[in-house]
Length: 191
Image (tube, rainbow, N blue to C red; front, top):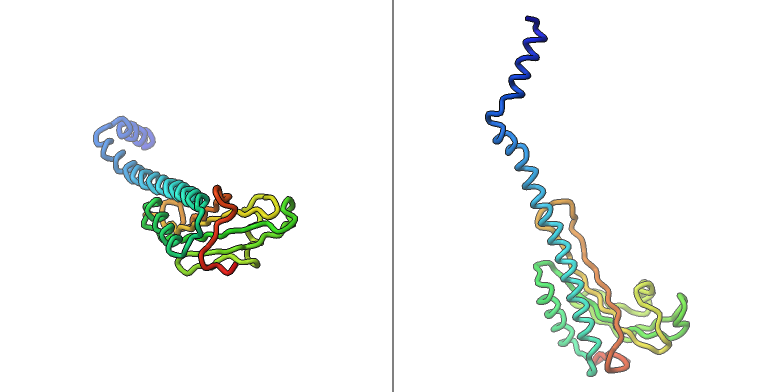
């Protein structure tokens, strides 16, 4: 018998032997299965967190749109607490409320928007007349003299495991009109 024939016969015998194959397959597949499970959990958690964050933002915007009395700093801090309760997360977050009205050219891209007042939680920057220009693409066209409420929420998301999703900030913007009053007033605002 030649060396090649002997080697071929032994390889065929090895290939036909099924003893111990389950433990070898488990050792090969189990790490992949665990990685897939953890990755699926991380991706689902990120999607769920973003979805709950957006729903909480819409809820707060609806609450603000129904206000007929001027809001105070205490009210807005309480709104941030409600946001934390609704989003039910361990991730740090903050929000900014701004009322904006259109002064001129309201039906074009060269419109002039005016910030009535702005409030941000946790010491973050408020919007003013200089910084509102960066939000023109987020605020829809409106009638001259009309007022809208811009609510922004930010949540710093860090996944539990490194599974392909980097740490990121979820940003949500909701623009709504006041429902029962011509504008949302801020108690103590300059104008």
